[in-house]
Picture 1 (cartoon, rainbow, N blue to C red):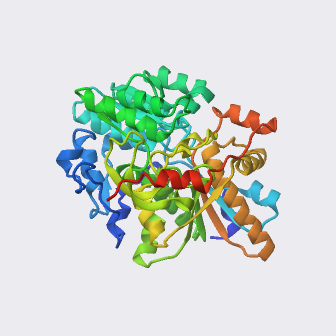
Picture 2 (spheres, rainbow, N blue to C red):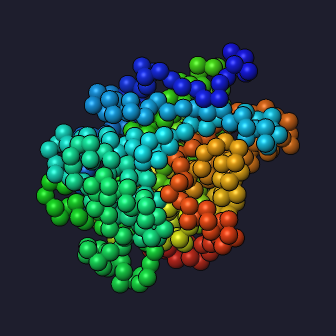
Length: 456
């Protein structure tokens, strides 16, 4: 189909929405390393994970052979409220940049949570309800995951306890109120409400918190309260599985117009959006059916891929969670209070870490002032105010488009616009006032944290 017939927005019909999630691990020759019991150093069994996660989610977490897992009808019914989401041709951005590149973005912000997080939140809440649980606990960074989970729990009449990274809790009071509106309780982390929170505060007085801190608190509460389980919005295999709907829809939309992307770009914090977006494309790459350049973009303030170490580490600051082999800055690493709250995790998905280690994808880090520069440039021509997290992908997409301008190459770029930034106006205000700075950890700070990695 000729290029001039590609619409601004490519919408799929409801019956084109995926009926099954794609399990990328099934096509990986080198599987991600298993989660380890921190006490024994041995791979965790389903029985050991069941007190933490819902039973069916445990099976999804451990399954690395089944390529497609059916999406239950109840979840697909919920998805229909906001899915399929549009794939947008950024004609106005292309014109503004005067680039021969063709730019597309998959927009996941068209639901109340404002992000892609609802794709997994509704799935995890469904399995918790099916198991007969009272409620779930979780952490949230920027607040999108906490908002999404509070919505999902409200839908299934489940209690929802959220530990929100303190810096985001203070920067984004309205995000907090959306969670409370949907019935969730929200506590700034680290807090005095848990043993691990008290310990972290004693060791790091005045800390602004991190996702690792909030995870520790949420896991403690889940394991101490009968009828509760812990759920996570990123990093885990089960989350990347649920988020594969993003990539599956993207590929279906591109195939409809015979569009073959040269590069796929996504922001990377724990890996949920990136893993979901690239899943079917990486699958083709692994099977030798096609090739793509895949780029993970992370903040320079929390550079897990680009400056971390591929090693077993705790997923949480309190060191009570299982050990995962991943690119990590060390579980004791607490990044500076940058405004991309969802990209403040010290590690990265084990699946994505293995793919990166095998050279199947690239990673770059960018500073937040240049990220917000790209965010405003995008907003002014495309009409969407992007989330700080999403804007990391925008920054690199623009950079790559400008390289095409220099070389004259007509490359096709696809990136993930994970969500909207309407709850991030404090950050935009600081940028517009010239008050935003870039804080990058020193080699000494990272080395100090990495020196504390568990010896496995």
